[in-house]
Every structure is written in C-alpha cells, then in structure tokens.
Length: 158
View 1 (spheres, helix red, strand yellow):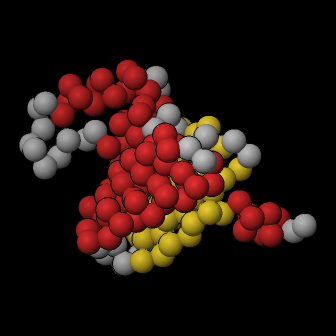
View 2 (cartoon, one colour; view 1 turned 180 degrees about the vertical axis):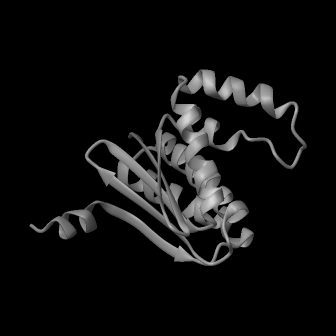
C-alpha cells in the first residue's frame, strides 16, 4: 500500500471552505459526529467538537478570509485534528510563539495562567482557546508555517 493510500484510509473528514463565522457550529458538529461514530465514543465526539470549534474560530478570526481546511484523522487509538488557513506571516509567527510558550508548561498550568491573563484582557480577547483545548481536549499542539499559511495540529489519544 502506498503512503498516500494509507493516509486516505486514516482520514475521516477533509473540508476546505472560505472561513466564515456562519460555518463554525456546523463544522464543529460535523467533525464531532464523525469522531463519535468512528470511535463509538460520545466523550471523544465532544472533545473533538471542542477542539475543532476553537481551532476553526481562531482560523476565522486571525486568517485572511481566503481559505480554511479542516482534516480529522484516526490512527489506531489516536485522533488528529488539523486546521490550516491562509494568514500573514506575522500572525503565523505569533501563533508559533504562543504554542511554544504553552508547551513549556503542563496543560493545567498553561490553562490556569491563561485564565489569570484573561481576567486582565478586554472581553473580545480571552486568550483561552488554545490552552483550553490542550487541557480539556487532552491533546498536544503542533504549529507548521509556510509563507502565507499556518497549520495547527491537535494530537491526542482517543
């Protein structure tokens, strides 16, 4: 079997669309459904829904309104959620730095620190999304950037 074929067999969902707020809840529900059905776990479906919601929300908020991709994969007892979007290199760099800073702390410590910081920020900027999915979603986050594009992958056990 070719590596491409193996990847296709792992892929549960692959969506590409224009990043609009209108799609946020529907994409979350759609991906959560596939996770629940594929792993026969309501709890995992909820976790995937939270992860997809936060990552897509960030992509819509900080992207450049051109393109957004969501991929959901199953690998044995592991789940991967990848959200990629077009954005400025400056925003991609800030995201990479934020995720690197969070990785220096345990998920619980990073989430607690984010909650303390959120109390000082305007209501429109909580800064809780990524620390929340890392903690509540029980995933590790990885960021990859190329000029004009950023991908965030959340990887965790099912």
